[in-house]
Image 1 (spheres, rainbow, N blue to C red):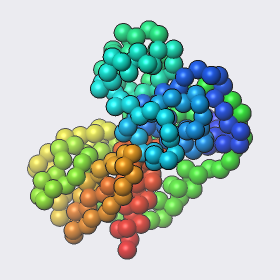
Image 2: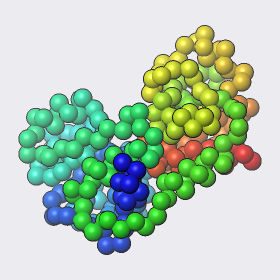
Image 3: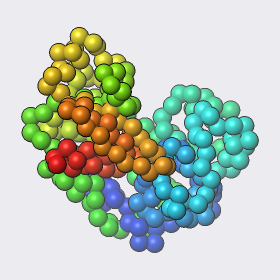
Length: 263
């Protein structure tokens, strides 16, 4: 497992290509970011990505789909004969089952750390790529080392999905998933007491933690590519492209958070 991760964790972008002329569509954030790292966004086979993915307009000139369950019948017909990568969803699975002419690949990243996300994505992409076997870097590992060194010791962080507005915090917390799971596994932070990946907080528990915890409101700016850090005491609103995308997006967002927090 480790050998596989080292040998293919970060794909080579030296001549990396799609292995056929089959149309490719990515409605999976981790897959789209992997294609960006592989310098494949400008290849003719990649016909579309989701509007929710953190890709600047100048980097991808193809079509951006509303994505997910908001796909129109016309859009679904357009996907016929192509390969569609999408993030795990029962609704999407049922919807795509009605379109047998669309080859679909479901991408599951729930409960995975950033390196595990990369490993999962590379396994999924391997059958559709060629000339991508050469290692160019171990960028994610380097990013995690950088992140580790930025995190203040013995602090508690609560990561809310959405903007914190005054005293009102979003209803959902990210706990044992993605980069937050990695920080907890590495004992770099403490957070909300739950074994779940995402949890609706208890008012009693949250109140008992409020004085000692940094409360982080996470907002993903997606294709708008905007970044902002607003702090008032221990309440922080963080906007970052890909902040909620498992793997690279979340790691980049946390580095941005702790670089600003350290100032």
